[in-house]
Length: 342
Image (tube, rainbow, N blue to C red; front, top):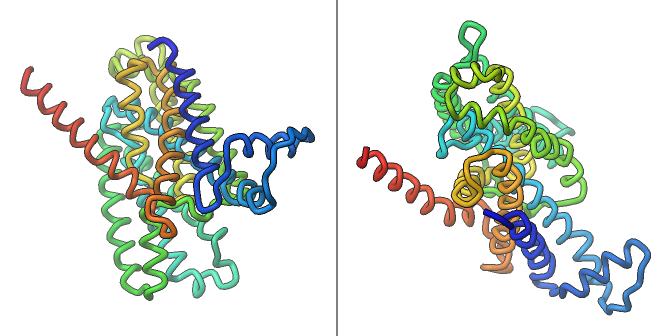
């Protein structure tokens, strides 16, 4: 679709302006512009008070940037996993990233003080969740290796098994949690950007950038892989290197996102599929379009999550599920109808 990128960029900017301005403290677009220019040394003469400035720089802007980074990363990794499995219903959760991060996070929340002592805290929670995501991905990768090659079908089954085992262990640890810990576990497992800060933004930036910038380098190879591994190999594509690279890019990016925001579902599934309908199946266009679409979607979802029931904040995972759940059912029904016509 001609002009898709300008439309998506406009959507991201509009979503960011709305998210930065709407809340208990209202900030107009002109005031946002004035604050930004004042920060770099230009006074536009636009009036705003000290509270608005503090809210914008300390609370709103880090949260918006975090939503943009996480949304873009989840969507790009969703494209990568769908290309790897050659299945539009695939997402990064298939290789156990989310379940591994959840298990590590729950262990840290419930047993952190006794196991880690003075190291327990938000930073430790983020690091442990990231390590848990990588550990589960490595387990799936090792299981799926067969005669020096990665078997995608076995990888899928291994991901299901690792997800099940991690879920069971998470349940066992949760049993010993107190009421406050249960609230933290519940909120974390549903996803939230409520703890956004500049340290979080800077902490995940290298990992998200690696995934977002790295994935387009494999766009041509993913296009070839859509023909099948054998045909891709005949075209000169090193399929094993491709599978390993895409999987590690997804693990690093999604692991970093989950460590900061908790589990945010459906972004990696819904965004690539919607944009595939407009941008087409070419990964050269689809990856960039999905990054912008994911950024816009998660920024708007976060805005809704913190304003729809203010002052109570709804976990962002609930908002994305409300959008993604019906769409996922639509995809299943569409696939069922397609199969019946064959």
